[in-house]
Amino acid sequence: MLKVAAVLPESLGAELGLAAGDDLLSINGKDLADFLDWEFLAADDAFLLRVRTAAGEDVEFDIERPEDLPLGVMLEPPRIRRCANRCDFCFVDGNPGGSRKTLFIRDDDYRLSFRHGNFATLSNLRDKDVRRILEYRLSPLYVSVHATDADVRRRLLRNPKAPAILEQLAMFAAGGIQFHAQIVLVPGVNDGAVLERSLEELWAMGEPVLTVSVVPVALTDFSKHELVRAPLEAEARAAVATIERWSARGSAERGEGWVYGSDELYMLADLPFPPAESYDGFPQVENGVGSVRYLEGLVAAELEALPDLTGRRVLVCTGTAMGRLMPHLLPTLARATGGTFELAVLENTYYGRIVTSAGLLPGEAFARALAGRSDCALALLPAESVNDEGVFVDDVSLASIEAAAPMSVALSYHFTDALTGVPAT
Ligand code: SF4
Image (cartoon, rainbow, N blue to C red; front, side, top):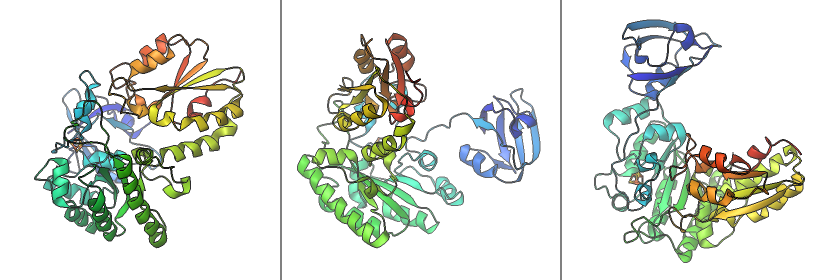
């Protein structure tokens, strides 16, 4: 059963009289368990929909979808599938008390893997889930492989019952499912020969494995440091060397690099990022793979659309990772707009200095950076540092920061998205 959250005007749902609070029960006699059932079963041109209205009345609609009218039915968010693992590097364990509530959810949901590209381990699948993945052709899936050796993977996941991932992937691949894989690199556990073997076995699966990313384990001051540590520079360099060897093979034999190291891995290795074209269209940019090159490309493409900011000062807030890389971008923006761009590199006072990502900065750090800066016309905050409700990791709201700030505040993914909306001087 699915609860309707809203119905868009000028939609088929509105014409039928559906409304928030109604329960969608079944389509063509098949019970609706979640948004996947709804999306796939309601995609037919004609179907029978059974609904229980908010008033408790059961109604059946014999629907023939007009071509140009959307269904317009928004569902309440799904109940997230919890994970069956206990990884030593789990981010949930790295949260201090008082963090945003949703940061404590250990989600491992194949549906969100398909819909939003969230990585899932597939270690909590029931037979029913396997059937749905195949029946609905949920492809590509984003899979946390970590290691193809089943024992090493079970150790990493702290889950002795985790199925052998290669067998699982092969079974789905036979049903036409493709994958983007990630390997979270834990030194001494799945680097070195284990990484080599994982890449070899994933490569041998052929086309179903579309890409592989290798990202170093991310820890905070609160993580289980007695059990897991970040790669040292030499370890990160060794991993990059392995990745680049396989990537050269991918380019030669398949026309694409296939395996990519994350920006964080290159920074740990103290190596320059590969050029933008090495990322083959940035298939795993959401996973921090090629983010800097991607950002450079977006800025370059939008320069001419930027407003005249002559005489105005813009405060660009970011974390220590991007803080090292940003200085070469800001002069370009200053030249294009005539404005002055000042970089505020913020240390993470919430998770600890070892957390360098801008997306994990607490609201309190931004509030401090903006306080008293009435010389600035605008402050840009990294858009990925708030959730959909506009709340930072420390439960501080963006609205409260905007209210206290002496300048305009804008969230920005790549500068130009926020700057193009700024009125010219
Ligand atoms: S799979 Fe591991 S890292 Fe992910 S939520 Fe579960 S325990 Fe945490």
